[in-house]
Image (cartoon, rainbow, N blue to C red):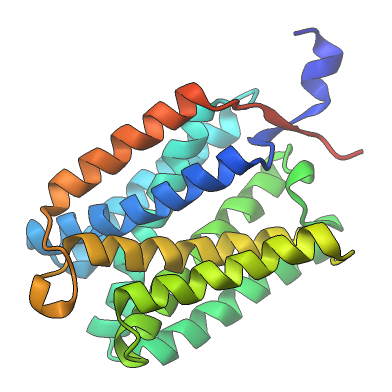
Length: 252
């Protein structure tokens, strides 16, 4: 690839069907992986959040230092963001006692504030503009807030609203179908639809992850968190290898 082509590419993947398939698997893994460390290893939400936050920050720094898009590095950073999102949301909603609704409301405010500040600072928040360290910083900060918000939303829908894991999965799956319909049949901003879909895939993954590893008495399948996490990770690696992984074209 020549220099001119490299300079025309952003450092994040093009948004394809494969992107969304891997994203949903990654968010599901974030739930089972986060629970494996905080619950199965009995480290608690705060310690687990500290561990995953260090991994996430380290991955972001490596991602920012990279000179081009690297699929495995990108998805490792996404997985790090979704695991820290799981334990951080659990800490905020359970250990701090603000509840799922309070946690979701707080995280929604933080997410919107991140998008607003990003837009004010750089003038655009679309994926194609993510090719400078400053844009990448806002991109990953926004992603972390979206992953954490999604966890709280999933827990609220499944538990507090009483819809259960499968009912909540149906709700979030249906909302994603609405986004797809808006994409194909309306002129709604593609940037708005992207972030809407990005947020919604997190609670979908969260409730599916809970369905896999929660006890039968709670409506889950009671699978081993370690086994579920390993299987999801293997599936992600296979999809990265099989599905086209190309960098998004840079906005000019």
